Image (cartoon, rainbow, N blue to C red; front, side, top):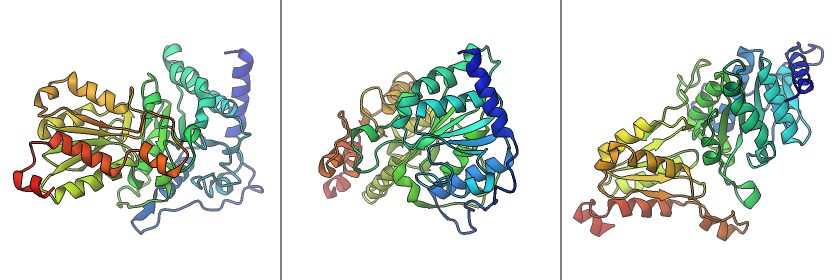
Length: 375
């Protein structure tokens, strides 16, 4: 890393910290979480960004179309008008360039939120994320902190084909020096993003495009400006005694639907929302498996070397393995690049039917006879 590069980063940092001209900035309000409890995920993310920008002048947002266009998915709506162009920074279409600028700004005391229009595009910036952001704290002997957030939609949306549909949870989850979170609902979006911004380490926030427009009940506690969700702690969404399902992001909702369906047959499933991919809350998973004796993992990513594989290793390497009454099952995306055609795309993504079938496989012999006949 050249001295000239660090000088450029330092100059950029000082520029970003400069006060915005009040004549230019109209200070319009961003999205406010209303008193009503039903909040969309995009609005939960927006309010979290707004509150952290207001709380700490070192926080800034950088990326393509985050400012004047209000964000490709309107997550940054209203922030450019309120905080100005020095803190909400529109960039050219150059992921490697603006990610390097953001990492350099973090080296020099800012707390950037670097937005990717999709994490598929972050492949252009992978060297900056892995070699510059994730490793610098270690390689500097703890002298250089890198408080940066990389955020944007992850995984498959709809009809965007192989180059825009990958899940990167396992990719980033494998890297020492990174923290990786994947929110499911509005509460996750607020609490995890605020914790990520306040963390002194690089944090990857894997959102989901389909979930941006989904609304969830949000408690008064979750609407507080001080609401944080600890990184590394899973949430039990539904308690059960016959089977444990572990998932993250959009597919948590699929698992809850399957749990509702199986409950009508007398089968009580425990559903765990990982929230955090790295660090992973192994303790919650192990305790649940010891209680239910059965495990199904659910993810959108590829089957080889996935999040489910890591969970399987966790169980096999702990005393929870002795509690299993059946081999665990992994539900994943198909081991192919994502097809474009709608009918084939549906076959490549995990479905509610896939999850239900996996649950029945681990439950075979455990379902009450009268219920098994009805099923």
